[in-house]
Amino acid sequence: MRNYRSGNGGHAPGHVRDMFLSAIESFEAWPTNTPEPMVDFEVRFEPRPITLTRACGIVWNCSDILPGSAFDTLINCGLQLKRRTYAAAARAMSEAIKESMTVS
Image (cartoon, rainbow, N blue to C red; front, top):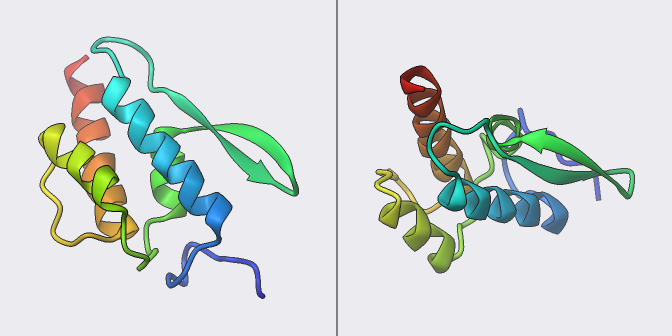
């Protein structure tokens, strides 16, 4: 299997999808007026902390279907998703992060 490249889109490996699901959980738990949360992203089997914004960028073009529970979490957070894909979730979450950073 080739390495996943976020710019090309398509199917993402499990560790990439799992990282984004963790990002959704962190987004949901993010208290107002605090710095942007970080999640671990595995690079060559080593976890590296990245921001939620970076996590969104990694799955920006991922066409995999988002699990229903993750979709529901984002809807309950007030996000409007155009589709049930990781890409749509990343775009909606990224916009909400930008808005919360400008309000703070």
